[in-house]
Image 1 (tube, rainbow, N blue to C red):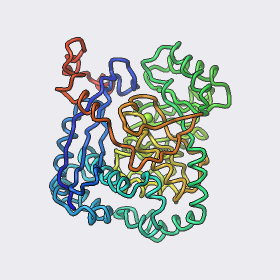
Image 2: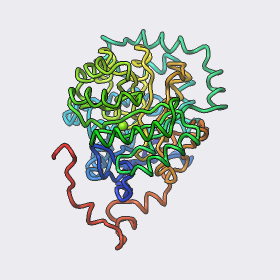
Image 3: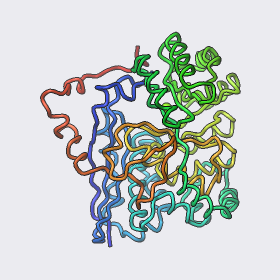
Image 4: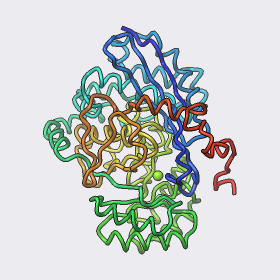
Length: 449
Ligand SMILES: [Mg+2]
């Protein structure tokens, strides 16, 4: 049995029309997926689905990068490949020519993420298990084999990783049961998009509390007076017991970040997310020291495990926000979960976009069963957009993710979505009454003001 095809799709949703997803750096995103399907000749009907998330322009570039990995996958032995995803990861990431495009960062690394995640989706479907459970039932030795420890050994050795995983082994079955019974805590970002007016913010905060969320998040960083007013509204509506995180999406330099967060401190923010450049490890450490006890969170643009290592070594983050498709997929996220466990920092994944909730829930649940063995201060981001496009969409009830049980990585988009939202020729982009011409107009981000 072999992998016989790697097909890519440029899928874009016109979310900028409603300002869903608008924040201080991304005023008009069109949530998009550079989508990949791996097909086999196994005759069992299973395909591997994966994607990289982008926010519109450039999704074609991302798709082309995924296509560039096809020679590694097509015509490959199916069982041998799925039995050695640690080895496959190393091959893809360390290709001696493609590596030049990173190394281990950006478009080419996200392409590896899409493909690696598609392989995991396929492996889990063939095993008849949801991905979280497939991972959580692997032995500590098998899990360590998935991780590339290159550049990590000063912070985490294979032996240490083994002992973390072995420590969590005894309670695995019990934690699986509790996950299946009561799910995993979620928080919602839906009330707080920057493009929403005060009435919408107030209404959505109220709904979030009524729906059982114990944490919400507000976008900040465009205008301080606006942020003070919006935080006051959110705190009034949510009351003192709901955690309110704030997210600046990289808007500030280090000094202004500290001043801005201090100006909002009276509203008791739980964490500040992406206060500055995701590459500025020392900057994050400085901010963390100066705004304590307010936490610093980051990760959705942290490009690889080496950056996470440094953030953890310096005590620069209080919450690690893994992203399922920014670093190179499941394997690298296993490495990051192990690093976070070693440093005792809770993992609270980034999600939203399109399909990121579907994917990352599996990683948090695996973390709970087999790595950190804890739910304390752990929440998965939830945004209630675009789930209807997935065959196995996330379900959030009473402020918690309902544990998925369908085999796979929950990555499969519905076929009609792949047809309708294909860019630029799908009906969603071809229809005469849409504002498609906007899509070809460059809109400089706030950074270029
Ligand atoms: Mg964010």
